[in-house]
Image (cartoon, rainbow, N blue to C red):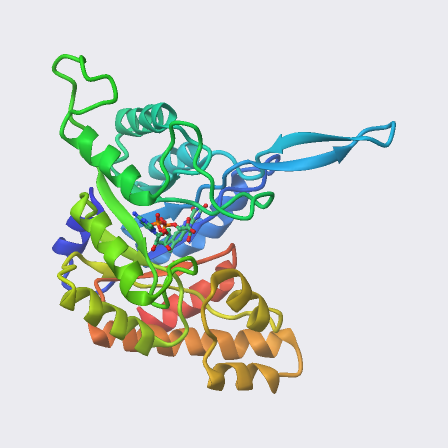
Length: 317
Ligand code: FAD
């Protein structure tokens, strides 16, 4: 079933989780160990992230270096299929522009369609670590909006080869990313919102947000989206702080703020166990307030921390 159908069919706030594919060489059992306990909360869908390959330099025995391509967490589509088979829940593979050309994207979408997976989260992806800014692949997409257009075209039976006869229409429900605190590359919030609207006009069905720790930022974001004429469902994505390092690393990596009260409370903790307690309690309160606000679904970035999310979900749902 599509995400939008799940949202429309439910009278109460739904719960969903995002998971990462295991590191290459690790068993899929490590994922099941995370998901098995979370199934208690009957998530209607699970998101599976995509991690593009990176270039790294490897030292040769003679001391020189060679550039090699490393794919650390492959298997997004296979994992989506395995999860559907094992738990009978819908899955949302994340699809990115980076590292793909349009043909490879089309082939990936055809695979998903054959597998009966009709939800995707359409993203641009970040720059490779070796690049200072995002560079599109040759004949690939520069922005997520272009990917949304390609998927929407396939939903109308329009493929890259324009002479295909009676090409089957896919039926993807298209999610996109939204940023309550603005995407870091956008010159200002209004411009970012304009680009978000372009993705909606290109055929996106719902928005899933970047994490935030201050609900007011999310409430303001929803208000501004509605004023801008963006009327599709907006699903907040959140996660708890679980160690002291995150107070600096989250703002650095995700360009979001940690509220003063939360940062102060973390500073007063004597160890990471206490930090996790404070962070978990904050996340529970955030969740309760978001439900009261009337969000259609609460999406949790699990990062493999199953016990934390079982505790949060039990306290909230
Ligand atoms: P876009 O919508 O293309 O926006 C990127 C930037 O370009 C923004 O600043 C926007 O304002 C600007 N822009 C858009 N259109 C135009 C235009 N026409 N002209 C000029 N500027 C424009 N990354 C992964 O690699 N794998 C994942 O699995 C993954 N999952 C994610 C899940 C969620 C819920 C979120 C919020 C993010 C996720 N990301 C993931 C990160 C995401 O790929 C990055 O944040 C990326 O930098 C931007 O992606 P986007 O889809 O928002 O890009």
